[in-house]
Amino acid sequence: MELSIVVPVYRSAECLMELATRVEQALAGRAGSYELILVNDASPDSSWQVISTLIETHPFVVGLNLRKNVGQDNAIMAGLHYAKGATVIIMDDDLQHDPADIPALADAMAPNVDVVYAAFDHKYQAWWKNLGSWFNDRVAMVVLGKPRDVYLSPFKAIRRDVVDEIVKYDGPFTYVDGIIFGITSQITQVPVSHHTRFAGESNYNVLRSIKVWLKLATGFSVIPLRITMLIGGVISFFSFLMALFFVIQALVLAKSPEGYPSLIVTVFFLGGIQLMGLGAVGEYVGRIFLTQNKLPQFTVKDVARHPGRDGG
Image (cartoon, rainbow, N blue to C red; front, side, top):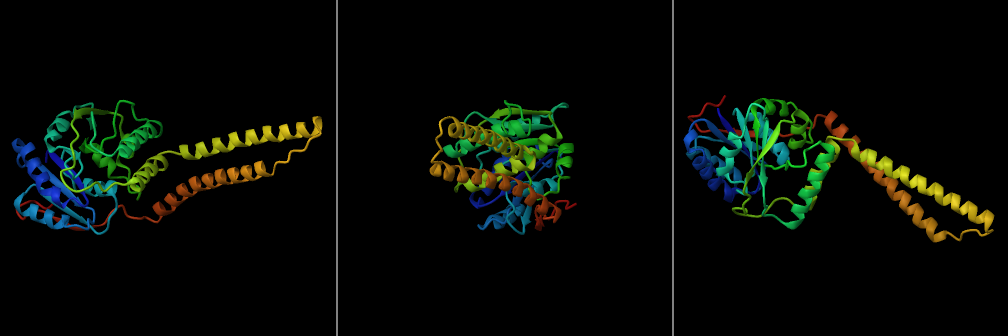
């Protein structure tokens, strides 16, 4: 198998027929050497029914039906476990990533390249998503050591042996890009175009974007804890200076500070900082607890292939 294309599917029933058609057109010269793995992330629409229909008419389609919704990265991990290709492509289900660009990503693989990211010159999405992507990019530079000129695109190509290393990760809080940068630094990118969504609406909202950021910030670094410790140290230093000022004011000027409003503000401020620190510690402890409890990344209910296809 030359290529495996892994696509997490959620609320995209209207896009899947077009997606399969465009993949077939883009890879017309590679017939029989690729597979399209559609991972139904417990989508509440008719996505699984559409996938089942596609399997009957498109022998290269493989369907995975998950028992419950586990999120995009965990659904991708499910697809990676079943992918057989020497190169694995990961892309979205809404056709904002054009299947016609798959050959460009696959052909950019070289002996010294393990991962090829798609680089977009313009993205057709809400302004707050662009802002979130920019912020996430800056955090990844600090946490993952990501090069400034590499964009963490969900559209990417990964070499087989790197995929084999990725699927060894068995924690419940999956962040594929974080795992990639923990495995290899042999990463490049190719310019491609970003497109408007073929149908439907985006499934991402602010809350889901924050969850992704937390997986990046707390799953691969202790920097949030160090920032909290630094903030605590700075506040303690200024509190000491403030106390010294009040002592000098009382001794030299014989004037005691009235101070009730400032005292209340200080108490609330320090209390907020303490809660922030406890929250950061709690986030790490909670993740350790759930990981030790062996919370599964995903559970596959059905695996569907064309009747004439090898099911091994």
